[in-house]
Structures are given as C-alpha cells and as structure tokens.
Length: 88
Image (cartoon, one colour):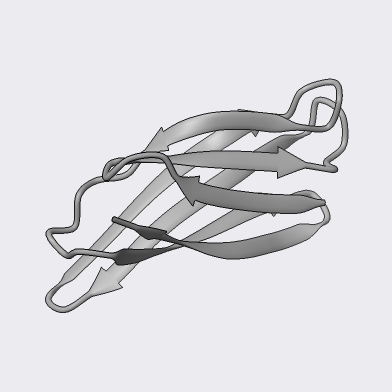
C-alpha cells in the first residue's frame, strides 16, 4: 500500500493511492500547522477503485506561507499511512 502526494499548483496536490483492497473506503486527512494558523481538511469515504488504486487532485487552502508543509494521512481498515507535501 502506498500514498504519494505531489504539488500540481499553489492550491492543488495530486493524491496517488495504490495497493489498497478493491472497492475499499478510506479517509484522507490533510493538515498544516504554522505560526498562528492551523488548517485541516478531511475527505471521508474516498472509494478505492476495483484495481486497488485511486488518483485525484485535491484542493488545499492557501496558507499565506511560501513553501508550506502539509501532512497527509490515509486511514483505512488495516491502519494508517502518512506522508508530507510541500506546497509552493
């Protein structure tokens, strides 16, 4: 199982999920914790495809900081996977 997140623009990141159970439902959590600001976004019940994968663009709220580091978690039936993405 893998979780990869990469910036596509200042406000969007490409989320690439692979190796999950076919048609599994997962939750994604995105959060940013900076000086005097904390942002969190959740996607509940993302449906994994029959091939065990899902790829999509996710909008992330601008933080007001250049090169903001977002933490990303995918929660699924067998555990949690985490990664980070630095947004321009």
